[in-house]
Image (cartoon, rainbow over all chains, first blue to last red; front, side):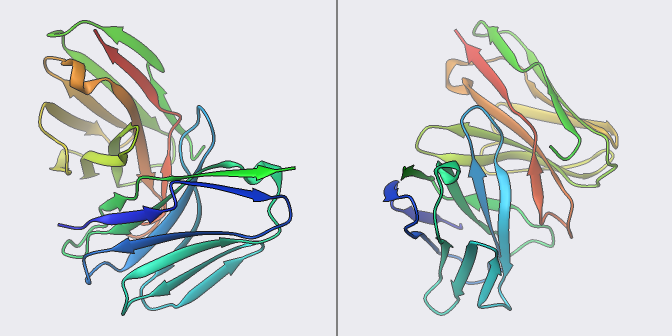
Length: 114
Length: 113
């Protein structure tokens, strides 16, 4: 079945620097890749997603890139701010179903130091 | 918050007792999901529903059942709770096509003693 690996598990950056989180997936049929941000005590919040027919997508300071050949995708946060501190999860859809069931990575705890 | 509420928000119960968690949505979405979140495992899909009375299993469905008699409500039942089911449970709805753009509720923290 699908497996999603996420690295690093923790990431500490200085405010204003960039942060990159990487995920790899195993099912070449996966075609939908969302990213979630989770703050302490809250549910995950969808921040950006990408489909397999697109190589890159940007939304202000956040971007996601997808390399289908290598089966990996990455989240890029530029000009990080303390409020970006949270746990981030990547996910990949199971590609064998007509409905999208998501397999999540194990999460990256991002700390932005003021 | 995508109009999703979960109840209860916290529950402590004993091994062997039945437990039902409720997810309620106000936006009339077709797809609803139940996940559990445990340290080191991210989120794992338990069951999902693609319409009233239409449900299917996820990757960790053993020990859980679900029901959806109305579009707005999706219930998760632990028939006989075990300590391994201590977890945080999240409900989600899909605002996009067939499971894309999933938005999550605030979660229910369940402790089984």
